[in-house]
Image 1 (cartoon, rainbow, N blue to C red):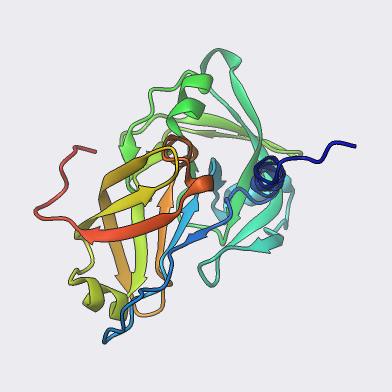
Image 2: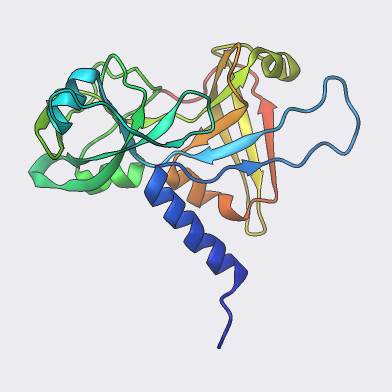
Length: 239
């Protein structure tokens, strides 16, 4: 019997994890070969597949009175998880994406985060926004097993960003609200993503979030090196 190529096996496993959790396996950078003080932080780059965040009210409408999000898998950041629940996202002319994963915990406002390809599939002209900045964005319809929610706004393409704690921020010489660059090397290509918003606080782990289109473009599956760099000046693009 012919054996499957290792790369094919890894890709199959990745797709299974992605479909079940809404978040791709992380890629960790290799430790620095040179001793430094402070030591180089452990950088993780994760693909954030399409997903949605819901309010408590919308959870009950979509999944029934008294319903709560049920954690299925913890995400890399402490306190956040992929829930068991999924919803159908419906766009104009009844275009739809079934089984979009709900992430917890609940939020003050419901929000749907898509990649560019997802937005095209739904027929929605979706702007790039930082999470939570949904004013004036397109809406959609969410369909759950117990009800329907019509969102007047809240559909975005999430701008790439980096979570870090205050020690990491000090190491890189950045602060909350600054922007950084991510360089990814793979056997096929080397790609630099600019305009990663820094989200720093006391407890977050060092993790970059990019979407599925960006992950495919840089061949993150085959990455041999990932490097986070300080970006001079502000954001170079308009969100």
